[in-house]
Length: 307
Image: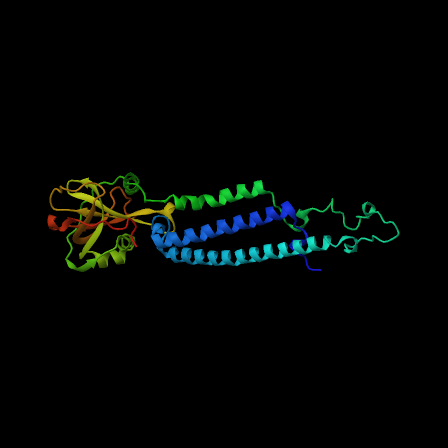
């Protein structure tokens, strides 16, 4: 005979089972809702790389779909159990004529002498069927599971790395010099990632040198005529965030800017060897050489992370 949960869930145990199921459905539903809201409100920008955002949305929708399916199944199961208990109660109202599988005939069979060796209810353990309805453990487990959802409803995370943390990421730098003259070429708006990748490729360095470039990022002063421009790059999640940066050299002392301002610069691309490197194994950094101080301007705020 097929195993039916209703055959083994009665009274308080049934209540514990359905409480566990409903709490599980509720917590899973909150996870799905939070995933969809994280995508919809843009909060994922602060914690996860853009290429994973769609997967979070799809996962949240799938979880919500499964929650609906399971909620319907639990509702039907509760209805079937209620119907079974009602039928059993009706049978008990029939008196001695109700056949419960015991012989109440003239042989004087004593109900209390009924042999339970074949099916000992005292020895029946619900754990044999994989059902554990200890509510204290259920509530403790749900409290742990719901913690990430509580963070979402508290609006966390509500911001990216602090100004101090980002400036520390950029680190201490020294001035560069010894740039050679290069012919100016046509250019366009560049991404930090493109310039940083080219710094490690001799062919790309050669092709980009001299091109006119416009670059936007955060400002970090290095000297009167040099500063670092940077943005952040997130490969997977916030924990692997690194700065993408370029050195900017201006023709005269620069004033009117403070660390962490958003700045737009226009100049010519060059690459300079980092001071202190081993001969033949130099590390290069991208440099923007500005010809006119007016080409350094305040810029509107952008996303901290470069797309």
